[in-house]
Image (cartoon, rainbow over all chains, first blue to last red; front, side, top):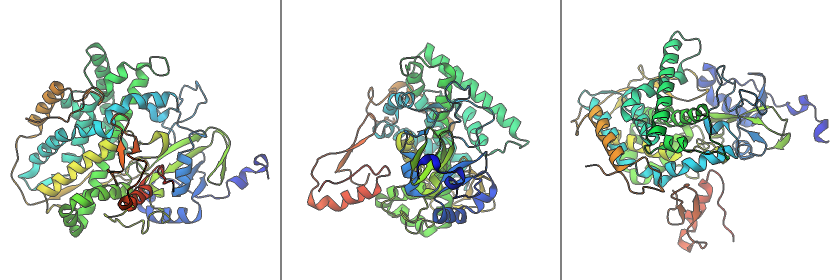
Amino acid sequence: MSTEQVTNEERKKNRYHFDRHTPEYREQFNEITTEMLDKCPVAWTDTYDGHWVAAGHAEVFELARSAEYLSNDHDPANERRGYHGISIPSPKVSFRGGFLEMDPPEQRHYRQMLNPYLSPAAVARWAPLVDELVRASLNEKIESGRIDFVDDLANIVPAVLTLAMLGVPLKNWDIYVEPVHASVYTPPNSPDMARVQASRIAMRDDMAAQLTAIRANPRPGLIDALARAEINGTVPPDFELLGVISLLIGGGFDTTTALTSHSLEWLSQHPEERQRLSAERDTLLDSATEEFLRYFTPSPGDGRTISADCKIAGQEFREGERLWLSWAMSNRDPEVFPNPNQVDLERTGNRHHSFGLGIHRCIGSNVARMVFKRMLLAVLDRMPDYVCDPAGAEHYQTIGIIQGMKHLPATFTPGPRIGDGLEETVARMQVLVDEQRLAEPVTARKGAATID
Amino acid sequence: MIAPDLFKLDDVDGHSSAIDGEIPADREAKAAEAIRSCPEQAISVIP
């Protein structure tokens, strides 16, 4: 049978009602995932004007790496083919989300420009500064015996570090942290949405002001690279650069927060595993980090648009159809991960999809791993007996965009402060970032940050 | 990294490559584990 003769009914015979934006999807994630992996690793769903869903590990792998047939392009002004980028459904207020919503060659130009700021060698330079921010964040709570791991640690450190890498003044972190976090978990119809929108506007105003200021008086960082960018022979307009900055902020903040809070909650529920991880950190920390990434998959998937008729992973697709690549469900495929719904801190061969795959693979994966590990070890060292309060732990109601947590309160045996508090530390780190020009690309500055 | 003595990471773009074309006999198990762990399934051994 030739491709043309296959009817839509035949092509879409594997059907599954899939709606990842409902609370039920979060509550029944294991059951839905098991069923889809078993019966329809690639399925058609009628939700959101109809789209494909890929859940199987092999299928997601093959699809995500078929960039010649898949487009990430987001084209709200309909200047090219009018594609809708990576969100399903497409957001009502539409703007292009940086190079994650571009195709090559533009996408490649951006990545090549930003890689020297985000490579493993570039990221390792920041570890001493991260340790200072973690120490100071824990200082604020260590004497009280109470902490909210989201509000008091996991929201703060990734945010301050991301601003430092961008070249934004560190003290501005509280303009950024709330809108990024709250706009992910606040439902569109919530009475709180007006406040969240106002905080987003304040953040966008600050981003635009930083871009203008850095262009006038260059200071090192990712924004400086963008301000001087020439992409495919042209200078990109500011709204496109602001989309890139938003992408770097969105990628840098809430994802690492989500990974850290879920992992700390799990370790509270499994105190023997926590003790073992702490005692055997030299051999266990790396594999445990990959396992937490696999199991909790902070960013659960990405949308694509089929850019040409094709047959991939045994399924025929037509140009213009939408596709959801589920990193989260493919990370539970028993063909690749024995006992997929169990956390195994020693798991080997852990080729999870939590950073995506192919040309759009997460550019900040090295940042995420480093910051997560520094936060986790500091908690294990300074609050070794912490117990999370299940009544106060608040997960996002839905996991369609980020599998995150709003709050994770815990109690622990109080301990002594070490050094100064958060505000003083942030001010000291600002001096250090400026004097040591830490936000330069690794091609211009190689050594790690030196703390006095 | 699973086998930092077998692979190096480029400072600038972070891409990984083999340090030496030959795998020492006592490192074959680690090389096999690296192959099994690569998310992009980009590593293979030529017999």
